[in-house]
Length: 304
Image (tube, rainbow, N blue to C red):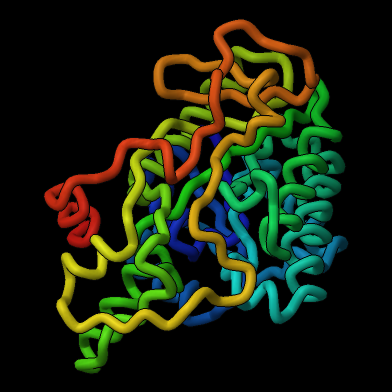
């Protein structure tokens, strides 16, 4: 059974991956929050957990060399756009320097494959979080080699993830407060944590077939934020955009189009910057993708 080490394994994405593939791998998780670690241990007792900080390179190297994982999934991040905007130094420390430490530790421990979790905000970034994630993608692709492979997945918004819009709205509903919406015209690409887990696993599978480094994404549907709010409540306040927010998000930019390859609904963005056949012909964004129906939104809202 292969060993999988997840940084930020107690987070939404890490724990969802563990849940879906619990019996397929021996899991190891490194994170900082004691309460979240205890919660993960109670749900998944076979997972071996460690309190670690990805900014402590020596500790990270020792942990990687001790475990000798077959796969590292790097999910640890400061991922809230407004917090990153207000704390750029901390965002750089965690999302960029911490990611570089994961790369260095993977190389030192000769980890065969390391998968980085990125975001649509890394596409044509306009905020601190997006810039740090874009740099993380580039760092991963720069260090890719035949002995230690580095690939990324580029996510859209993961529904029901901690700090995201759906839990935020649900919390306001519990308090009998109006849902605070930044703009009625805001659209977001969105998919479930189960779909996010599948995309990571697909990146792992494809890495064994493809020599080059790549960023893997997938065509997915959009959700209009007003429609989402109206599905949950009629009591809605429009409060204006927060720092760093955009009305729409791109998953693949016009600049990246020549270096993409479309395989069914999967989008590969290659590191070699060589034009590809069967590439996307237009940017993929929350504005030009298919929008979710009310029923599909309700399914997302009820995801466990």
